Image 1: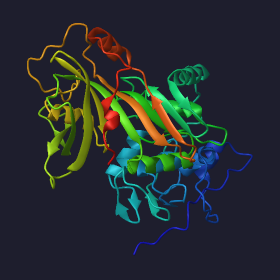
Image 2: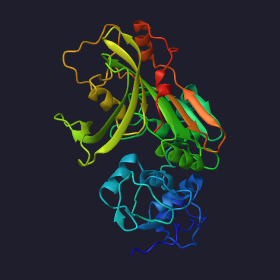
Image 3: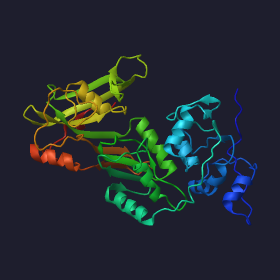
Amino acid sequence: AHRRAAGPRKPAAPAAAQPAAKTAARSAPTRRAPVSDAPTRAEVKAETAQVLATGVQQLVVSADENEMRIDRFLESRFPQLSFSHIQRIVRKGELRVNGKRADSKDRLEEGQTVRIPPLKLEPQENRPRSLKADDDTLEFLRSITLYEDDDVIVLNKPAGLAVQGGSGTTRHVDQMLDVLTDKSGQKPRLVHRLDKDTAGCLVIAKSRFAAATLAKTFRSRSARKVYWALVAGVPRVRQGRISTYLAREEAYDGDQRMAVAQHGDDGAMHAVTYYAVVETAAQKLGWLSLKPVTGRTHQLRAHAAHIGHPIVGDPKYFNIKNWELPGGIQNKLHLLARRIVLPHPRGKGTIDVSAPLPPHMRQSWNLLGFEDAHYDPIVDAPDE
């Protein structure tokens, strides 16, 4: 059986007469009594310079961190760790949960012990931040906010803006949320994802409580999502249900895509999507409304291609040879997270938010004579 640590341990505070950076390098960590709650982000940031200088640590998952993804746990406990560093630690097996290797997407349970390897990073607090850059980011976030209350923000994410960082990605929503950190050190948290080139409704939690509650909402399929897409051709069956298994595969060019698989195939996960044809432009193009029941990677894009009607402008899944893009329509992904409906995390009724068409889709809708106000038949699709 694996032994469980009593709780997170913090290094001693530096001597008042010595510079903080030098003291952090010389001070040996001291032990303190276990605490029941996770430290606030402000507390973590205040002591990160010392924590990152320590050796192996054993951290106990608090009640607030129950069901938190491992990568989010590391981001919360160690704000200075980069996305790539977190992924590397997990990939190499240096991080263990109750003595076992884990994946960055695995979810933690209260009371589990997380082994953190030695971390040697310079404090980022010493790096000056541009106040103008922060002001510009704040103004940008305000300009794309569709809904906000004390617990939840719904952003209208532009197409082309990544939600999270990754290899070669320096500008993304998660990074921008730093400017919304409140006085207690709480930074708004992502609770679901959109592909970089997908526009529309992106839900953000303003507290750890809201994040945990909303995460359960998405996992239990209690959130209703509606997407709009422009596809090549028009499905013969005007309303239908697509049910397949999807698994990740590597294409000949080294790119990774989701492909239809068989039950039992390595990595195959069940994916279900309802669709309805809203309007058509002859038989050349169709406006589809899509309601995903599950939330698999690239699910809507892979399913649209699977039924023979790939989404216009999709560089990964458009699979019709010699298909010519109609004049006036931009070769960009025509996929919008149009609407999100979900219960408020504190039981304050229902949040129901819709996003407008992004500029390139607005241009296509105008050209094709499609009307936003047209009745959307996907509302009749059953819940599963």
